[in-house]
Image (cartoon, rainbow, N blue to C red; front, top):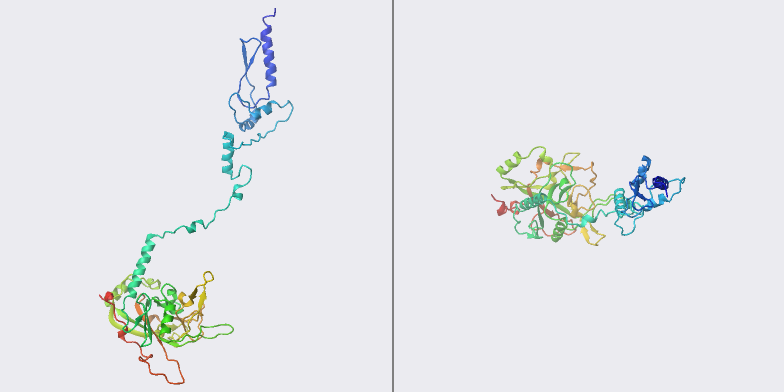
Length: 423
């Protein structure tokens, strides 16, 4: 018969052996192991020894498995023989494809935050850069205020263009009543307005929307349309200016240019003067104020509106019908008239000029030879009508006398006031 003290001592001995064998269990994980004796009625519980603080870092990389299962990392640790070195780095965890485990989600979140893909490559290096032009195909919506301003300017310019009625005996060219030809008098009429009256000058006149900043007059017709009108009354074009291999001035039939306008009614002129400061005089003209013409008719040789910067005298030489050039768009092969870009009636030489001066006149910024004759030019925004008259070409045989003397200035009859412009 066994002594009553033998059973407790055997249980303590078994507990000590079991504790020594489990000393390499997972670090920091609080578990309890039940050790039973030979008797099914008694159970002894042994506490797990505390893990050193240096092992806490390793334990954070191990995920807790559901109860009843043994983590792979823990099994590997428990199989390590005493005395073998233990790695300080956590075990590599490879996510299973399609796995929804917390470990997989954690790795995915880490990859998103660091910008790396699960295979360790840089996503920023492998991801295709966005095309910066993708949004350019989308329809661009213009600010309604900008559209309202553009519409107001269009209406105001149209009101200026409609100040004067068509010249009697002339035939309209184009859809708008801005360009006419008088086949009998051999004249071309084109309407416009005073765009600027001070500053460097390259053109006397340009089409609206091109070079108003360096032209005295902006006209409501294209250069190609005016060119066609001159051909319709028998004018002959020549050649534009050339510099290579040497300077050759432009050639062509001489064209006289007249400017006709009516002074505004005194009340309108006073209102414009009161609302215009010295600083505003350099700004772009605002055609918002309606122009009400008076009965006072004015006409002048357009050369008197152009002044030499050096001598301060008016332009002496007439313009010649150089005829400009054509250029072909390489994308669609369509030909375009070069002077439509602004070079209608020039005072600086351009190979694209429709009318040009027949001498060497610099077009380089800083070396421009002409400026507006400010004191002779009416206020900006004043409606005007240009009259282009080809001068006879010298011939060996005398030509029949023209119906209208081309050297005589036009009279008041060519500038009737339209009904809508009357007060």
